[in-house]
Length: 385
Image (cartoon, rainbow, N blue to C red; front, top):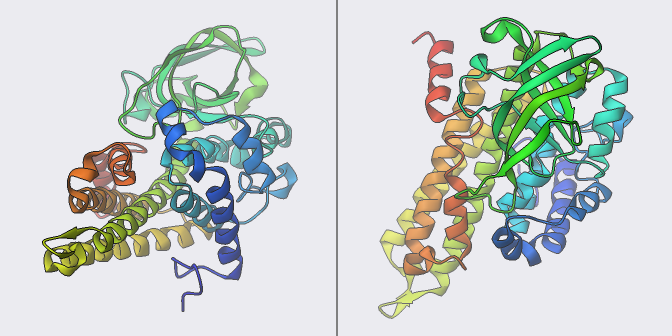
């Protein structure tokens, strides 16, 4: 049985308490400013510190680095509740960019690296980003071109990255570089810190959605990065990246479920309040059936995302299931947000209305973290098609 505020079958009293904590914090700290921050395309840096003080940045991280413990299911419910209560996907995405930047350091870094790079981020003192995608590379990670050449106790890094969430303000960037030969066998992960000579934010990118989260293009021009910033073993970064993708796709699927839930809630509210031809929109069968279809697809996407979350928390690596969950959730999110706009009619096309923003935010998900087409290829290979 699902308890109060539960949305997934795996939820315990601990998850429900965390939901309540995240909901209250987001309602107080994000919701009143959501529209203004989206329009400004940035939220105050101080919000990281506030989130850390509320124990929301360190969920899922070990206590040895200042984290609050827990597993991916705890991080999932907190992020979902912040979207539902905060009404700003961009803000939550920006606050959570460390969720894809830090796991490789936690899993493959040294204790010294965890203290140096992970602890300040979960404390809200620094911002972390992940840099893999390149202007010429897209989803083809194995062909990345950013080169890191060993020179004594440094690597000299030259290249560029793009579509980097939190890249404008990041203090440290977990960066995929080529230290060896071609394809996946020559890739490593380096942490490149703000202020390193030759490391510049070459452009702040303008996006269709996620406005409150900054997104950057980064340039590395003969950056000298200490060898001690290498995460794990040289030329073994590709496996860490692929493992990280499973967690990222879970996070993206969960965000899609939350966005779809919020769009459904808004559409239901509007259908009850808006009148046409002398009665509420909810009085028309066509509207009720739209809401029924939206609810059904959302329930299915949530079930698959929940299964992936539980398996991931157990330590199971299932890239095909992650791809399925991401595709199911992104399809649902796109469908539900589109129908929510349709139910709102002309108002759904207005910037002042939440579903208009959710509709724009939803468009990134079939692309980010691996395109829908790449996900299908992963599923096909796993199933022997």
